[in-house]
Image 1 (cartoon, rainbow, N blue to C red):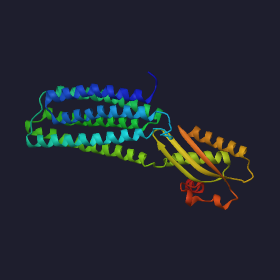
Image 2: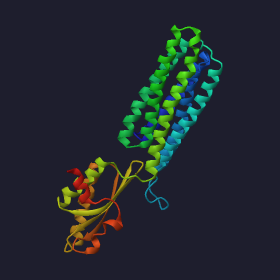
Image 3: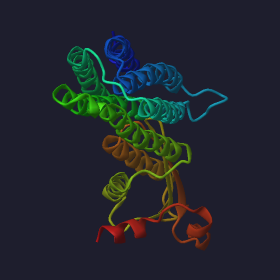
Image 4: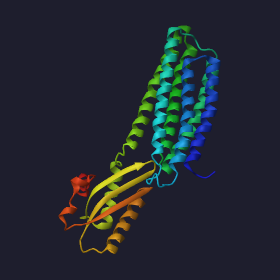
Length: 311
């Protein structure tokens, strides 16, 4: 199988199916609402994995006449949908926990159920680590979101096992611990859901690239065109793994078209060497013309501002 983003999502789907079977088995033999909450989160994992596979397949489609910037933003829809699914699962966990508060009961076959839960966590941990590596290789928010979701599942499961494990050595009156642990898990899951929704929202709103990447762009421009080069209107955004960068470059009016093109090509190559999957557009203006200094009208960032920020 080729090393593609879809390969890692298929790992996630396979792991979700395995852990789903294990966790519902653990809940079935124990009747623990805590283990039920763990199983419900895995059901979300599986659904999210299917969403992610569809989103990645769409995001990797090349640009066409209807989508001239490509389909990369499809990844953000997947991340947002996964966040919403996590919140829905949390609501279900809270509902089940409230019912168990009303009528507490001691889980049966608890030791066997906890061992099964630990086994499923080991499967998720290995899969999440593989997917995090894949997210770095392919610079994919979808893979990162799915991997972090799996890791959240791992730590909540470990916390669940430790919490419910106390009940092995306590009297039946401690049965209330089961729904309490489930609610704590739900709160943790809610934070993860909001994090993924926020990250998805940021991508869909065309947030500018992070400060370290803006610094790399500035250094690349100055390396190729000189420290005192003038440029403005630096606008950046990211769609999936694709970065889009454009700015106005001020050059002497006597510069030829050929020399300007050569310099722009050099700058583009330098930026692309620093940042993966970059699409750079440069608009050249004569530095002697007053109309070239249209920073406020153009918007974006100014090279002089970025340089000042570094000092």
